[in-house]
Length: 282
Image 1 (cartoon, rainbow, N blue to C red):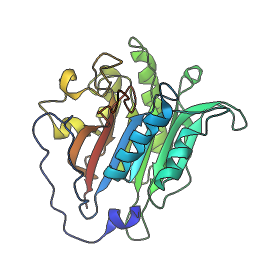
Image 2: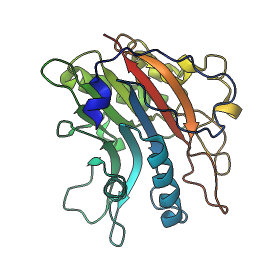
Image 3: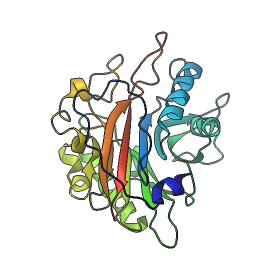
């Protein structure tokens, strides 16, 4: 359960991030006492062969065992069960789905958080500017009277390459949401930011939070060819899917690209996933 893994009283030894290309498949590391495992993935809604893609995603999530999952481009429509709820049921996760589409609409599109254990009901923020139809979701995961939980946020920012000004407004809106809802320093923000982690429009975010992948791989983070989270089978290489964390609340154990292998010509998505392991600090 999430709360047990978060807060089991034990001495945790931080691991040094592994050198070399992070795209190589490895056996999942055993969970360290108290660590938090995070996965972010853009699902690519129902494009391609969704049943086969779904099977690849379920298999990898079973292997990685993340505590917290941020999903983007989640779709439900007639004939298609909400993809996040479907995955959550298959994997045994609690699901919080957020969308600008009305709850009664037949077709809804948005973001989701999947939670392995106990947590608060989700909160939602429609990001400015409202005409871009972007959202952020928040849950407080785990925690008890003695120990703080983890504030986890999932989002998906504006997608146009020249839309930096819009993304900057969305970051301002997102940080306002964090300020209104976060309980402490154990804060994690994950999702598809549709830009590089060092882009000017993310400056306000970087002033408060650290890029987990760049922390683990400082010499690799700027190499789009080796660290792309966009699947080059479909899109130009670029690292746009990120996990940001409060460096006062966590230390990075590991960060790597996952869900980056095809099977029988089928890829899990047009994005790769990003998997991060964090150690809470006292």
